[in-house]
Image (tube, rainbow, N blue to C red):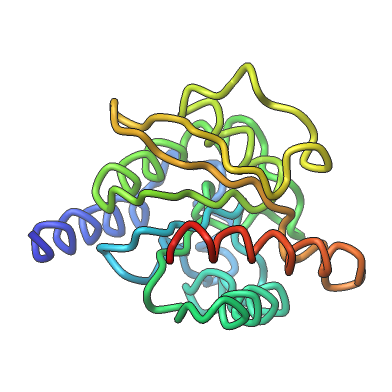
Length: 200
C-alpha cells in the first residue's frame, strides 16, 4: 500500500514538472527554479496545506523551508510532532512572481493535484494555512456555507467530508503572518494545542 502511494505521488510530481499549460511554468523555467510538490509521511494523519511556494521553497523544491517553515517546525515541536510524521504541501505548486497571491486560474490548474494528494494520503485532519487554503479546502470538504474570515474560524475543528469519508478541517493563520506579528504567533501556538488534543 505504501508503495502504491509513493508511486501515485511520484506520478503527480512528474505531471507538475511538465505542466506546460500552467501560467507559472515559463516563470519557473526562466528562473531555473523547482516545483514544490509536498513532503512528509505518505501515511500522515495530519496534512498541512499552504498557499504557494516562496523564494526559498522554489530554490530547494521543499515546502515551508524558509522563515515561515521555521515557525511551522517550532509549532510542530511544541506539540511533540515530528515534521516527518505529517505531510506538508501547498495548493499552487509553483512560485507566483514576487510571492504575490495566487490567482484564481492558478488555483484552478494546480488544485486537482492537491485533490489527488488528499485522496492518496487520506489524512484524518487537514490544517489550512492562510485564507486561500482555507477557502479551497472548506469548499472541497462540503463546508462552503461555513466560510468566514480566518479571524473568526481559526483554531476550530470543523467536521467535513472528503470522498464521502469524514475529515476534520482546522483553520489556521499562515505562519508567514507570524514572522513580524507576535500576536499571530501566540494565536498559532494556542491553535496548535487544539491539534495536540486531536492526535493523542
